[in-house]
Amino acid sequence: MLNHVSPPDLPPKAIDLVIDSLRQAMRTVDVAFGIAISLVVVLVAWGVQGDFERDVRAQIAAHKAVAAVGDAASTPQNRGDRTEVEVPFLNFKADLSTAGVFGLIAYFVFAIRAANHLRRSTTIARRLHAIDPCLLEAVLTTPSIATASRLSQVALTTALGFLAATASYFYTSPISAAIGQAPWSHVGMMLPPAVYLGWQLVRWRALALRSTNAA
Image (tube, rainbow, N blue to C red):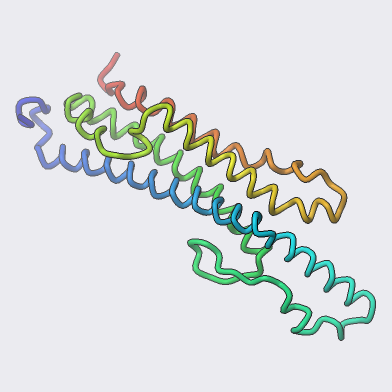
């Protein structure tokens, strides 16, 4: 069947390679999305527990103690009030505030990575569609965020953006309160990666089904 529907200069092994490349790209999208949403879930959990607020209070108390009685107050006991955690997926420990920064940055990186791999995979999908649309349709039965229903894709990316915004709020609100800024002033910065990923998901199937041989 493959020899019948494929171009004469494209052997079956090459077609298998195209199929494997597409599946690998879809897996990469799933892994990157999973890491991004897991990161913000962890940050939200820390925020709900009040860890960020306690950490900021400990920093402020330590600075006030140093300002009041000098460097002698900056003892291990005072610094011991700081919360130290393992940064999710990055496998090293840091103060909670530092871990929060790395977590938010990693969310940006992995959400954008998922969107970029999704966008680039359209070239592979279009090539497979040009070889045989039935092969592409078969590959699109693979469970993935890329092959999920439109409603599921919108729900997942909306959840990602909401959790990222909430994580940012929990992280910045204690600092904003200390310096007199609005706690929601930086939340909007978390939305572009989720919006970018959602846009790529919504348009992916239409682009993937467009043959490279189309006029």
